[in-house]
Length: 185
Image (tube, rainbow, N blue to C red; front, top):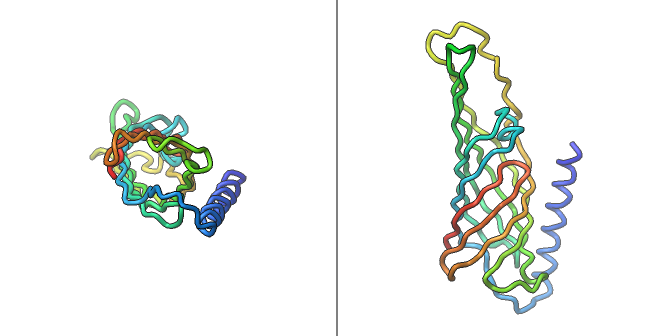
């Protein structure tokens, strides 16, 4: 609960800071929106939003829109799939598809960063669509695996390096799923 309160407070602070910098009418002109981010990640040991008790690969896609100076919103979708052997006889299968929005505040101007680099803090809010199934013939407890809460709130810190004005590479460290990938501007 403390993490959620902290995340909401940080997200609100970042939004206000972005709006404040916009209101100052400075001449800083870098836009972060209009960016498609494609990433691969690994869910942490605690699992992907509480669904899995081990690490697993995740594919992530988002598209950023400029909302205010240095602040973007990015609708996103992720995908992960796994199976786990139960009792050396049956497999449990699960597909997890988180959908949500990520709010990002870029600190490039404050840090006087070179235009090749972006540095940011972000928060994401969403829900996970989960499809679970057991192998045919399994007659045990179908609730053996307990699903996590479908709603989630994550914190992110990250950076992007621009190879040119069209392509970059990013690293996003998160309380949910950390990713590395390519940004297409």
